[in-house]
Length: 286
Image (cartoon, rainbow, N blue to C red; front, side, top):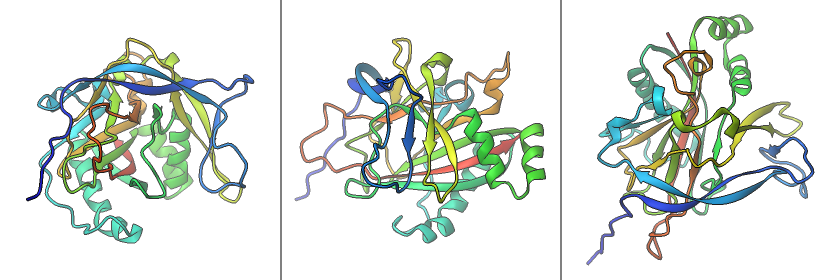
């Protein structure tokens, strides 16, 4: 007889890995894609801090993009994508579902441009990231708009006349609830600007592109959350940037969500590894 396991529930104290600057005082960087062997993937370190991570299960509707830069979507139908193993199939079947979700969920959204996705599996090419980070900065988002717009004229029009964001749509791919390596996220309203450290994101020379991500310094006022036992009919919207968050007096509280995978100390031995996909999109709105 099959034995079912209940994933860890409730608030938990766990170690999260925060930014530690390069020892030589240089500007921080990390490498993306394939680079010559022997090069360090990053020149900065991390320091662990024990953090209270609150479970928002049952309180999902208390959080939204404008205040927290994350939002939970629930009770979605099964995806038309059968396996999440083939990139072309994902683009054909899953991308339209993500686009529709963002247009229906983000107030005022009129245009969505999906530019990539990442699948994470225990034995896959990409693993859960155990460092607190934000995927984009204001500078790199403007670069993204110019890179993915249909023309330079459209890019400048979108940057000057519309609200623009980058939102990651994150979902688990496990058949059952997520047991291990859940995702933690900090409310943007509790993240100070001085805790956000731009990091140069260097692609291989043949790509010819240098972006920015952000590492995060620890501060005790940050408030951290997770959603216990996530299932395949749930999504987390992770807002990496919102142009409204740059405006003085805006109701948007920063518009950038720090997040990380974490090791829950209550995870049972032999728990199924977390599988997930995140789809990254530019979202333009009024």
